[in-house]
Image (tube, rainbow, N blue to C red; front, side):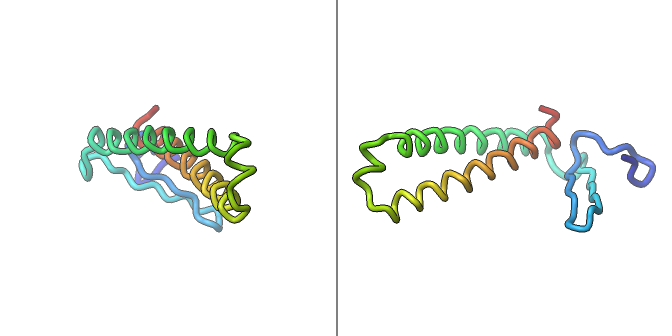
Length: 99
């Protein structure tokens, strides 16, 4: 895609609005991409660790059979939200950092 005569590449923030409009903002020169990519990768690693721990807990029959139903449901919802956030972060890292 071209934006103002420039081709959209890695190092740009990219979003698709509800009506299908694509918004691309080149970030080179505006932010330190190396630093930002490092922060995003660290956040993704931490989220992966937390998600693995949560998923392990939810697969533990001892936890799911003894914990109140509301607690298990809250943990399941958290797992869904974190999985969605992980997908968003992964896409952001790929888009911004080229990974």
